[in-house]
Image (cartoon, rainbow, N blue to C red; front, side, top):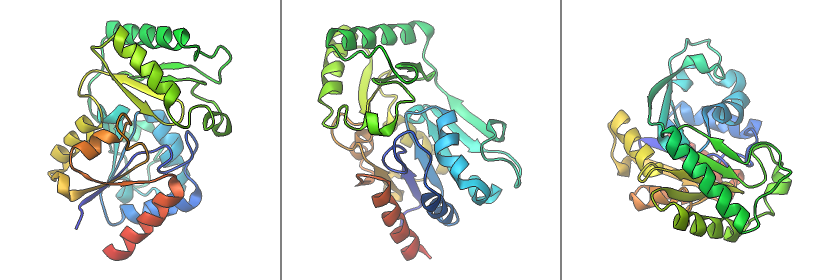
Length: 260
């Protein structure tokens, strides 16, 4: 029997960059009554609040939140709940940063310049975007081709087969091979120092919870080679590949059903 259930966020628990549905929030709350749950993503902490915690509302009790482990920026930043039972889940002051491994300003600047050059050379740089194209997430830099706030209906058709992003990654590796590049979400590329992917985050989680890889069940959508969930498969952690949050929700209901 598994001891920990872990999830990617976008297209695993929700529609990309949008809050979980109320139905999914309820299922997650039920799961937190039974298991420690880890949510690991390349996103920054504020997006965890918007997409995961805010939709839970009053279901996010202190007892449940203490069972929730937030692995930000692929797990290079780790947060646990330290607030009171009646505390606000979306109050960042109620979350304790266990660790963080930021990059240097010089490394961040080089990644930004590299991704910008690669996207421009290939004709994929968009001038009129919804939000920032490149975001510094401290221990990771993320390129979002259409901007961080682009609507899902605009993002999903842009690169459904990942070919645009694969070509950007190929060129970026030529320009700056000292970094690692992963395709994520619908329009994103995550860039970070070697080894600082989900392998790092999941390894740290195992240390913190004193569990082994066989004790974890992981859900993710980008499990293909080069996808940001693929390192979890390479670790030997049992992984369920999903296409959307609906598939994940059905699987969670099954896990809850056999665990009670």
